Length: 382
Image (cartoon, rainbow, N blue to C red):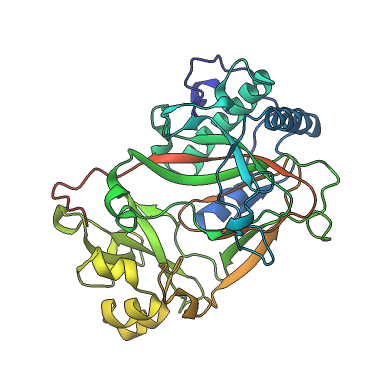
C-alpha cells in the first residue's frame, strides 16, 4: 500500500469528498510497469475483489436503469464488425457512460453525485484509482500526473456496451499538431488509459458466448526505449528493428518555437539526446494527408531509415483503405473478466472493442492526464 503522504485524490472527485480507506492493498507488478513502458497492455487480474466488483456493477446497472447514463454514439453495430448503422440507431445497443464531468455543459457529471445510487462505492473506487495514479506517477517516472484536480484532468466513468456493440480501432491520444486548431486548447492530455472490468464471473469472451474482448495491437519486437512522449513531444510512429528492438519516433512540433514547424526524431543509442531523422517540414499537409509511403520517401532522406518507418495509426484519408497492414504488429485479445485491471499508454497502443453478443458489458474506465507542453511562442493555427 502506498504511504498516505503519497496518495493524491486525482480524478474528478474534486468536490471535497473525504478519501476513505482503500478497498484493498494496491500492488502493481514490476512486469506491468515494464509492459507499459514498452508499449504493451498491462493486465492485472483480481485488482478488485469479487464482492467489490459486484457492488460496483449493481450501482452501474441501477443508474443506467434510472436513465443517468449518456449515450455517446461512438460504438458500432450492424451486419459486420466495426460498422455503424445510423439509420437504425438504437441507444440501448450503443456505448454509454456515466461521466464525472460533462464537457458540453461544463458541469460535474452524475458519477460524482452524492445523492445518486451507491455514492459510497464510487467514492471508494475513486480513492483506489487515485492511489494507483500516484503509484504509476512514480514508477513510470511521469510526474506530470501531479496536475491539479479539475474538470479536464484524470477522467473517470462507468462504461456500458449494449448487446452487439463494438468500438473500432483507434488510439486514445494524438500529438497536438495532429488535432489542428484545437491541439493547444486544453491544459492537459491523456497519458495512461485504464479500465477495471465489472462483468459477472461467468462472462465468456473467448468461447463466443459473450464476446466483448479488448483487442490490442502490440509490437512484435519490444521497444528499445520507453514509449509515449519525450519532454512533451508525443510519439507518432516506429522505426522497425535492425537490432532486434524497435525505436519509438517522436514529433517535435515546435521547431524554432513555432507551432506547425516539425521534425521527427528518435532517442540516440545512449538515450541522452535527440537523433533527428528528418529535416524541418510543415505540419500541413504532411501530417494530415500522408501515410507511411510519403514519410519514408519524402521526409526521411536516409533510405535505410525510411524503409523502417511506420505510423502508430495511419492518418485517415481517402487513401487509408489502400495502405498495407503493419507487419510489426501482433493482435492480442484481453477478456473483460470482472475485477481485472488493464493499463496502457494512451498515445502508443492501437486497440478496439470486439462486439458483445447478448449481454451488456460493464467497466469502470478513465485516463490519467499529464500537462501539455507550453503553447508555442510563435503559434500558428493551421
